[in-house]
Length: 126
Image (cartoon, rainbow, N blue to C red):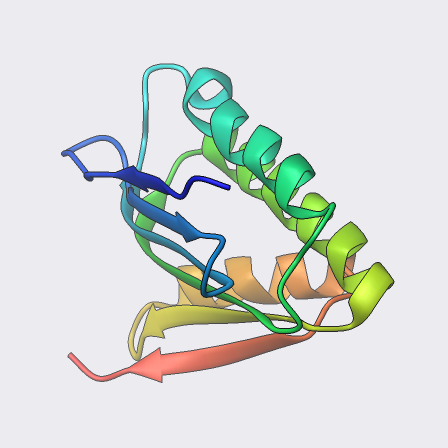
């Protein structure tokens, strides 16, 4: 299975979905013109990955900012991960936020309250 690697831009996050290691990373800003179009390959990739996931899948989310349409797409990604976790209990989401960024911490807590999946809130020092 191929990995997905997308270089980040001013409007889109850096993405690294690595099937071989079971590491999934989304980092940067997520304000694409068309969030659904940007995130669709990631959701589709998770469908394929779900057929044979690694024993441990580590998800690192380190976003500076994301818009409302991205938040829905990120939830879609998390829902696919929730299905994988239900099958093998090996998914952990690390939600990174800067120590003074209450909004990003709250966003992570909101996702955590919606999903049945282990979340770790990881405070980063500036």
